[in-house]
Length: 339
Image 1 (cartoon, helix red, strand yellow):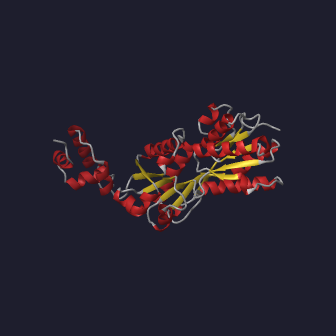
Image 2 (cartoon, rainbow, N blue to C red; image 1 turned 135 degrees about the vertical axis):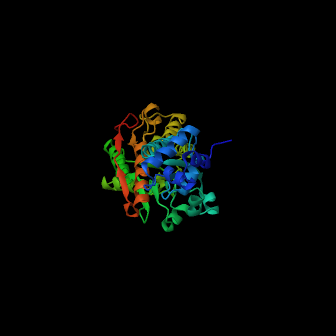
Image 3 (cartoon, rainbow, N blue to C red; image 1 turned 45 degrees about the vertical axis):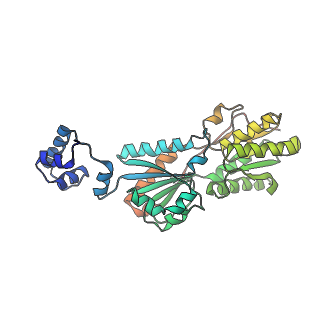
């Protein structure tokens, strides 16, 4: 038979409620009583149930990580893993429990954000991959459950955000391409409904206009952060225009940039001799692909760590909601040629 909290209380000679209060770090337990309880726990080999502990505690210690669109990610895209690594590192330092949940737009229609969190006893959540059109994005504004968004620049009551300055970073990388004398540019964009797509598009457009150039709508393609869609789009464009069209592809993710590079090669051309390509994120594949990909480096583990740290602040103090901007770096490799 498994050891129960009742067995611990009997061995320590205290009430069951006293054991529960000691496990949840209540201050009204004397050191002597606390020592007796933990001695009994060690002798009996009792392991408290995490969910039961959090339910009985005044302050829930469960942090939820809600990932939307998990099935849409590419197998080479390990950025979510790096985010989770940072979130978990903070949780370990602060002795918090982390639970990971997957969702998607249709699932969010069936169960409200508040209900989802309450059923799982989540004190607060880090939301990854949420789109501005998702049900959870609209609901969290009215919810009293703290949350932190990754890459969605929105701050409200108990709602914070962690990201880099996507607009500034995108402007910097397109200006670098223009300085290499590229004047005709194709943009391989992400999801239309993603806030990060809008930010990066704004930066690209400002960079192009700031250099006295134009970016026709016909050179702007939404590829949903998909390597396959980026490949198909780039190959079609190259077969139709050859080297008489754009000389550079600005991609809003490294995964899409890899698709573009493969399309260029399969169409019989070379990178960067015939076409230049840049990405965004500095996914580990950006360094090992041929040629090495010029891109914007984000520290996703640091983003995850800061997201969970901000969430804890909001849980402890509802006025702590903020948009934290972390540094980024333009990484220049071999995928851009000066012409």
